[in-house]
Image (cartoon, rainbow, N blue to C red; front, side, top):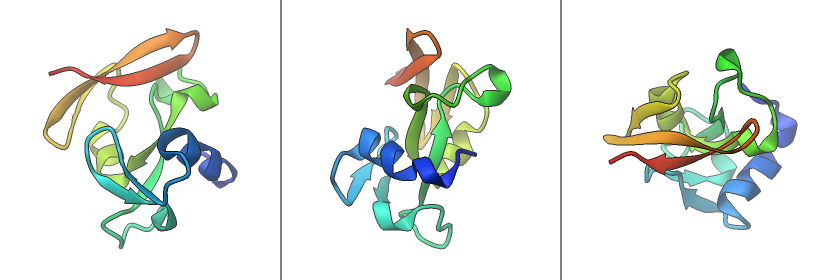
Length: 103
């Protein structure tokens, strides 16, 4: 799991200045619900390419995800399913990835 001191930057990279947004799978997240598993809007930081699979802690490998989306993805890479949809990671530069639909 990523360090808490990056949560603002990761949120802003994913959602901008908004206080709520949807993750790539369509689940609604609220900025105030960081790591609050008792909230239906909970989110945390996900490494697109998991550290355990050679991913890095670079900002371009991190994304704010709803906790359920992150749980479904787990360490799956480069293809996975979340919220009933299929996704894949596309490399955009060395150790940097973006998520795209695989449907």
